Image 1 (spheres, rainbow, N blue to C red):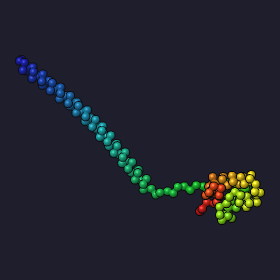
Image 2: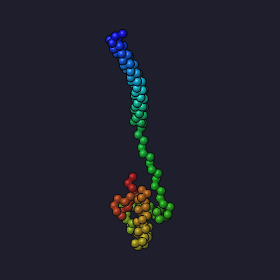
Image 3: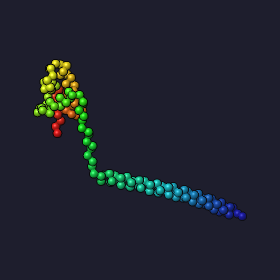
Length: 140
């Protein structure tokens, strides 16, 4: 054997090793490509489900917000008297006018107590206070 044979044999062995390495790399890339294809198909399927859900939700008829239950009048008889005054009134009233209408003595303590009751009725949505100290029934 001469040096040319060894060199050629060594080159052929080296080429065979490179071919095996390239084939192994190609197999790894093919495997990764297959995994990415599966993942891409999963993303496409999920996106389609989201699109269908969105389309379904947009097709639903709009629902009116639920109507709140009617406000409940406190059980104390004074509230009944106050509401009777407002039922007969044609304009907003102040606490003092309500006291006069229910025949309460016009004393600071009575006016303040009626004002507190009026504020409580405003909090419950039974009355409104368009201006400070001025109370009326809500407009229907």
